[in-house]
Figure 1 (tube, rainbow, N blue to C red):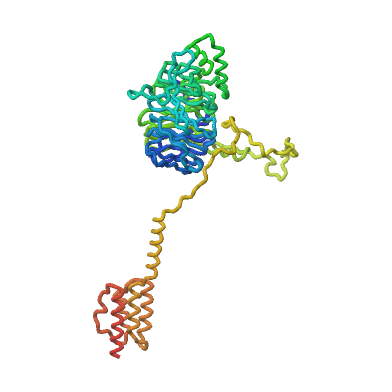
Figure 2: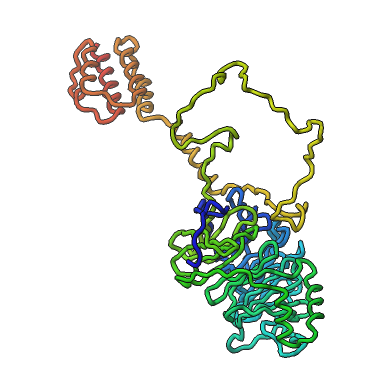
Length: 552
């Protein structure tokens, strides 16, 4: 590799597959802002929302008008809305809580990626990157589109004609272009096929700055870190580049206006490059100098300390992890399935990857048990050691025991109300209107299963109440025969009870013993023959008893 692998114990990053999620064939994934919900787009046009704490399905958004595969999913800032782009050229905005569709917009090209505006809690604008046209701003309420420039215009003021909803009927004029909003959504960063990063004011459709990428390779992916301080690009030259954002996180347009005034002596492309050099500066480059592999779905960790990228080779599910200094720290090897999407959890060291088969794998850190964490004075031993006890170790009042006085003032009030801000969410406080979890909705039982249960239970009751062949035959025989004075009656009644209890037919020897108890030997030789059924046994015995009474 281009750098030695450092000690993996120094970093808090995932190491092994902890679990996998399965529901249909999932194609793309996205976490909400807190990492409590995971949205996944499926190949059948449905969007599944997983509760990441319980790893169960919390909601499933089904669109009867969409049966094509989902290409991307995007959460709003506070998680109340989800934007879904599909291969049928549609953009669908959903209400997460109610599960109802808010709007549906159809474009002229298939959107490979769509992102909601990050600065609004209920956004109506999104940035879409179609397959064979320039990126565009889409108003989801009205359906109007504004195509963004992807090339440096020849005019000196940077303005380009507004080509709204105009596409050529011949070959596509653009290769797939990557674009993203900055942290607060006032600027759009576009990576084009000429190896340039354009900073665009989408309100005026004006290119404000340009940063050339080393080598001039096509930019395939472009994404900001969660904090907005770093920008990541993935180019066709098999290199991932990290740029440091020099513009302020807020009021980026005002800062560009100030930079524009300082570069009045320059014109055209030179002016845009001069402004761009004060907006972005190259920080690090990541590549595999041995295999020269392409990268897929690179992104930052939640705190921006780590960078991950998936191998684009077929049949490989490998995830490379670098630190921000440029060192390769870990290579995660998964099953022999191609990787199509990646996402790092916003808070925890967890990576979620999507395979070509539609499974979602959850990578987590392999924690080892540390028993010393339960007791501060507990010491773990690698091997047996000889211990020498103290002289007063088992005394009731050890001489060496000294009570240490606490330096804490017990009279001070403890603040249990103030909540410290999490570094991962330093941009804003815990909003009361933010959606972190979805209420659990119990699913009703299927009526067919209930009918089957009722039918089976009724059959069981009928079988319990129905008499056996032995009981049916014994009743009529007992009523037709009247030999109360016969000494055989008691014996036969007892034998019938035993037969009913054991529910098995008597043997030939047993029949012989019964015959010996009769005062006169039975003349019928059929009694001693092998009995084939319980009903036949009792019928023969009844007939024999009747013959004995008559003979008497």
